[in-house]
Figure 1 (cartoon, one colour):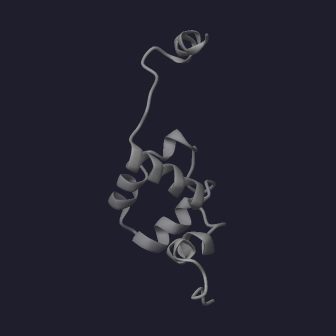
Figure 2 (cartoon, rainbow, N blue to C red; figure 1 turned 90 degrees about the vertical axis):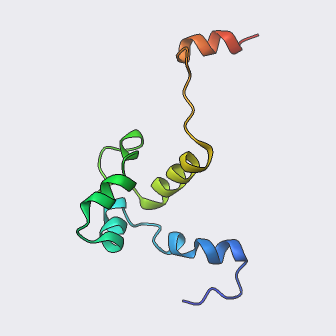
Length: 89
């Protein structure tokens, strides 16, 4: 399939769009084969979003992982109940 007339953003994201129904396991297997060390390093945060890479869609994982890598992780220091009372007027 040719994506030439598409905007630049779509062209750059085409591999993710094309693999929209692929799971994390399928994509990692295709890209890294039997190299489990690479898979473990890249999938280290997977447990925050899902239990098993065989069920999580790669696109959802990629968006969440990219957000974490670009913006960093954010955690409430006081916990959810404390932050709710602090932010309430």
